[in-house]
Length: 371
Image (cartoon, helix red, strand yellow):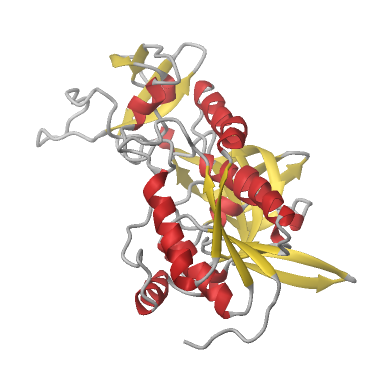
C-alpha cells in the first residue's frame, strides 16, 4: 500500500471498534490526513453486563489505531447522552410514541458534542463510518452542503443523519459513502485489521441484545390496560402502551386468540394498530392489510431541514421508517416546524415518534417526527 505524501490537516475520526470506522480511519490516513481517533463512551449503566460492554470495543479500536499508526483517545459523553438522548427517549415512550434514539444521538452527540470536542483538539474536520455522502454546491456566491444517499443502497444511513445542519456537514466527511460494505470488508482483510470479521453492531448500546420490554421495565412503570378489537371486544391485557409499537405482531400476549377464521380453520395474525392514551387502550386488528394499518397522509413536527429552510411543496419521496423503500409522496405544506405529506399509495403502520425523512432523488432534504 502506498504511503500518503501530503498532510491535509487534522481530522478526528469517531472510532467505535467496528470495521466501518476502522477502515474510515485507514482511508483518511492514506489520503494524507493527520488522523486522530476518538472513542466515544456514551453509556455507563450496567456497562459491564453481557448486553452492553464497551470494553471490548475500546480494545478493538485501540488495536486498530496501533496497527494503522494513528493516535486514539477515549472521551466520555455519557452525561450528555443521558440528558440529551436518553431522557427524550423515555419521554417519548411515556407519551405512547416510538422514538428513534439513533437519529437524536447523531444530532446531539456524534455531530455536536463530538464535533465540538474535535474542534477543541485542533481538528479542521471530523469523519465517521456512516454510509452516506456530503456534496458541496456553489450557487449565488455561496456554498451549500447536501447530504446524499450512499452508493451502497443496502447500507445507506442518510435516514439517521437527516437532522444535520449546514455547519455540521461543512466539517464532516463520510469516506464510506462511495464504496460498498463488501469493499470495506475486503480492505479490512487486506490490511490485516484485527476486527476485519467483526459482526456489525445492532441497535443502541443501552439496550443491546436484551429483551426490549425487560429494559423499559427498569425505567418506566407498568400501566395495565385492555387490548381491544375495533369492534370493542376485549382480547386481553397489556402492561403499558409504552411497551408496544404500531405494526407489532409478536409479543402482544394474545397468541391464543384466533379471532376471525377462514374456512380451513386458519386465521390472520394480530397486529397493534392504534393506541388510545386517554383510555389506556391498545387496539389490535387481524391481517397485515387491515385498513387501520394504512395511511395516505401524515403530519410531522419538530422538522429539521438540511438546507436551513423547508423545500417547496411538490412531489418527492419519503421514508417513514429506516428499513423501507422510498415511497413517492407530495409535500402538501411545510410551515414553521410542521409539515404534511400525502402518499398516492397507503403507507403501512405509520408510527408516531418515528422520523419521516424526505428525499429528492439521492438528496436527503431533512424531515421531522411523525405526530
